[in-house]
Length: 267
Length: 278
Image 1 (cartoon, each protein chain N blue to C red):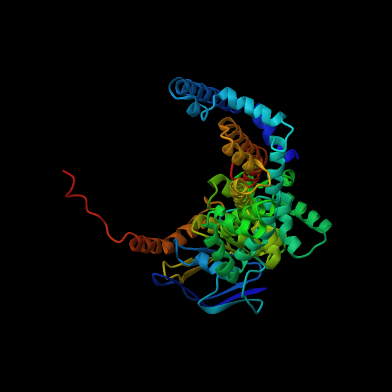
Image 2: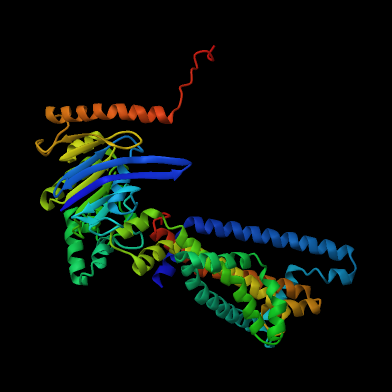
């Protein structure tokens, strides 16, 4: 398994045309856990959506195993910031959904769904309705639903951004455990540097609009579990933050066009 | 069945429900008292001919009771059966045609440009406007013109409700479906349709109320029985009490369908879809 971005770029045509992603080359090998980090609107989600097949690149192409990406596929299962569970299906049926697409016999669907739900510690909630679960539990169902179809790559677009810090930490541990057992290739979008350093084998920092990969950090030598208090982890976080810092400032400068001087107005 | 009864039973146990019922009863009693006062002041001052046009609550009650006891063709049970049977048929025809048409409008651009556009235009037409044409074609003595007007009144609302409901399904759910391998008919029937169901049911409710209004309007113009016909006959007979009684029957039926069919269904879907806390 190999993912290859070949001069992939994306333009949005709204009022004038905005270059969201300048031509980008990127290769992701099997088993990697790649985190894309950058300020908001830097094209990291765009890159993820192009790989998922939800958006077409304006230029260049993406290939997975030499096959060009032309639309969404179950081989590239995606998790979103929202759980996006189907509310009319029970938890179990949500997880079975993708297996149904793959036309597995019902007995296998059931067995696999149960196995993966137990893997995310939701064995007790198979017959619950999604709205009965907490935010973190829903996101775990979404994770099971994406993993159960055994995709070539798991795409995660800020999947834990809407959760509280404790739940997020807990899910990091679970995700790493799952990744260590399945060695699934993961492409993970986040704006949280600490999250990226906790999870990734490689962190890509994006520049502000137009998005471009500014720097790459190789974290393969950093031992899991990575506690934020460990010196090596803390150092990596600060290095990436420094790289990111200038970009966030640029985005802010672009979004707030001028500062208002109030000094003369206040008596 | 459990799905239907559960919320009704739950509401019977709810204090809020009984409080609401109590407030409504007091409100109704006040209206009746006020009505009686107006009645008394009219009969004291106006001449008898005029006073006959404004019935007392008691007269209306008698008319209502007689209407249910009566054995003639024009009694309420009979008329209600005739009207509801027409309503059911007309509404079903509208759904059977409107549902697939709505799906098509949501699915294909060409259908949206043609059927969708036509539905929007015809939806703006007051359904009673179809009645003269329907009577010209089918005469005043059969069910057909009433059915025609009922279908014409609710079909376009149904088409628009189904297509709009599907149009409003969040992109996120569609993407979730597609990334899990759903496409074509499966995406349609396993993601879009169920996701749109609460809105579609809301649309069916609108379609029902359009059907019911159109039906009564059309029945005023034909001689083939039904509640609308009773209204017309009472008018011709200057039976004001009868008109009041029939109007009360019509309102009661509307309320009953709303309370027994649509409210529990909507509540169930909204709860299930996580749009509302149970």
